[in-house]
Image 1 (cartoon, rainbow, N blue to C red):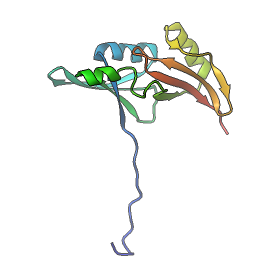
Image 2: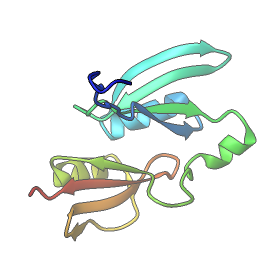
Image 3: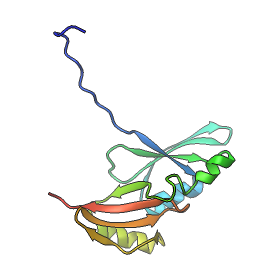
Image 4: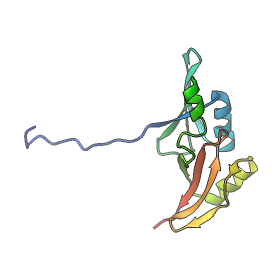
Length: 140
């Protein structure tokens, strides 16, 4: 490449993160009703497969792709995609609003909310036991 040709700046983003689930409809109901996520797309791909994208309200464009487990190995990963560690981090602009709503929806929390140097956080589980952080970062 010659020196006078301007390189295009790299622009990338994570568009979707696959989350292995047992059932599309149960997962859609949980995320849209109990966490107030939005259903972005639900397309039938045939043979029992669907392309299901969900996202938190007013998200930055990253979606969760709900992927139904289709074999024994995938079924073992449902709820344990990271070996028992927190898998996803749901950032919010109002921790207590969302925490109280989630409590009212019967969300399972594994601890009490904590105030940390970086913000307010609590670990919760989705319908399959996948661990998430609900997190409101401190503003600088």
